[in-house]
Length: 112
Image 1 (cartoon, rainbow, N blue to C red):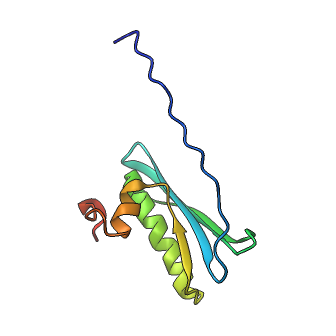
Image 2: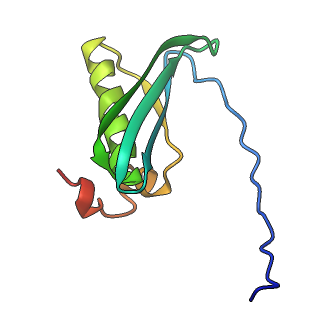
């Protein structure tokens, strides 16, 4: 086992412009310690790819999944407050992507 060296796997990710009429939001949440000190952030972009708004802040301690869920909630609150209708939401969390799309059950730690 001491000789084992895992082969890194890479995936090329390309940021795409939102469709006409949509606002794109990229969100992220992270936890140091998992659970531990946590932060969330999101950025809104228009159809030209220009940054319209960005927000990042520290939140209560939690897990990575809880932080990612809180980032989605914060971004959606901003959308509602500013009367946006068509959104294109992106997250790097497979758990939350699949839960939001109804493919997986919502994790109990974020069900509230």
